[in-house]
Image 1 (cartoon, helix red, strand yellow):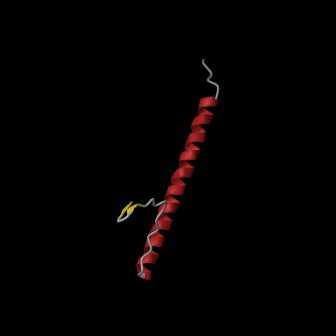
Image 2 (spheres, helix red, strand yellow):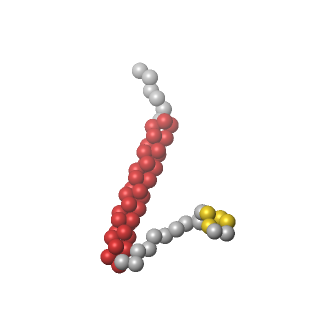
Image 3 (tube, helix red, strand yellow):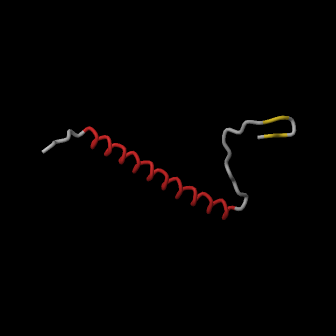
Length: 62
């Protein structure tokens, strides 16, 4: 991030609103998005495990 005296490296940032109602709404939305991402991540992991199990299953030719 450029500054007047050079540059600064920002590792992370956090948005905080002075308006309490606004901040509460933001935190509620953030919590929903976090839960949705965690659910998607868990579903993806389950799909990967299922795909690996199917790939390791011996094939029977008739």
